[in-house]
Length: 214
Ligand SMILES: Nc1ncnc2c1ncn2[C@@H]1O[C@H](COP(=O)(O)OP(=O)(O)OP(=O)(O)O)[C@@H](O)[C@H]1O
Image (cartoon, rainbow, N blue to C red; front, side, top):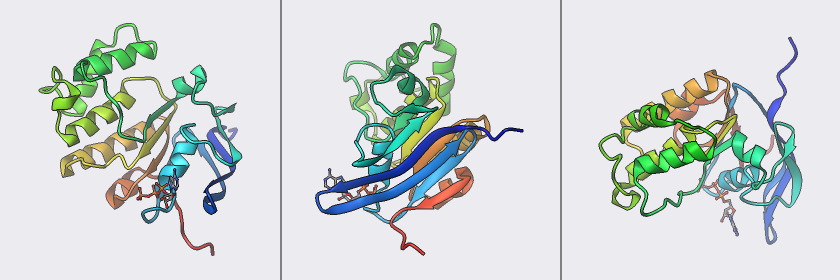
């Protein structure tokens, strides 16, 4: 059988801030069904790399391709294929939890998203809060809403920066099972994490940044 082509292909990526090079000569290929965990100490460059991967930051050198297309945050095709939860999301202050998810699903082409939105609300355990405005949610609930936005839309590549942040123990367990299932269903995933249990359950490969080269 032919080897599946890469969903994400990163070649020779470099990112420096002033004189300090954070990412250097970084290359990576991620295929459908693979989950790459980026690990490493604070400041190792995980968020910087993820931001370059999704077009939120521009590398000084190197290329990023998604499904063979050069990364561009404004390309409709890339926006369709890539679901990201990398920064604290800005929510519309006057749209409820369920309205956010409904809007996102429709913006990504779903004509009747009710069943999917209900299912995802159940999964992230925000059913009781579905009518609340984002400003009234707890910090962990806001994180759950941010994660939910990735699951109500089509996706081929999921990019997550420390998705475990602010989740309770049960939430981290749910997230690990969810991401493992997503990967098994053929999604490509790249995520940064400081949570060994999440890395252990989800990752098919671990890439440690900032490690001494051996
Ligand atoms: N815009 C910027 N200007 C200058 N330095 C920056 C900028 N963004 C990031 N850095 C530096 O780049 C390095 C990598 O930061 P980054 O946020 O990628 O680390 P990280 O591995 O995600 O860390 P953490 O585990 O703490 O989240 C840090 O030393 C940080 O101070």
